[in-house]
Length: 235
Image 1 (cartoon, rainbow, N blue to C red):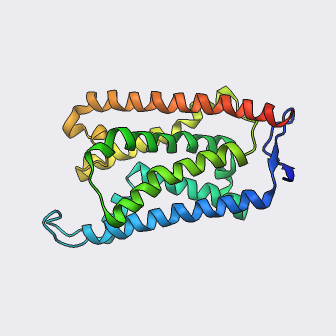
Image 2: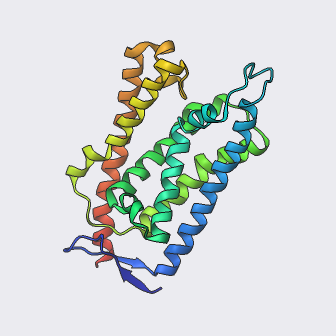
């Protein structure tokens, strides 16, 4: 397989990467899977919430459902993966933040959380079928595994530093703040672990602390792997 170098590599350990065509094909395929998952999930959620049914006594407006849809961390994180792949494929300047190694690595940490939290904390209590089941599998298993493969095999490595870790957690803090502030007005929360009306703010603080500890551990491992993969590629 051919190789190329990338400008995001550190000067002392610039990694050799798979050929650009392979990277782009993988990114395009993974982007398509992510978009399909998000569209299918929206196709199920939007009509069900915009019409009256036994499970939804009050029809909600399109803007209201749109905000609700993007309150879920799964949807936001998968959108982030789509934008990472799009930045790889297009080179558009407004997607520059998604080409940064720190961003691509924090997305790996976040999507790992999505997969593990769903698998161990949510899936045992949920019964789904049809299109919703397909979207759930795509967004909670297929896209996380595909992105972790892309991160390890196709992303340039060797530029991350331990001092990047605190900044990598900032988007997660912003997300939690957004959910709690919106909840004060809407009185709904995407996850029980973020619902102070059920757990109290003390319970939410404990849950959020555990989640941030888990994400921090994921990112620590990823930063270490970044250096290890860079060293391996330069041998």
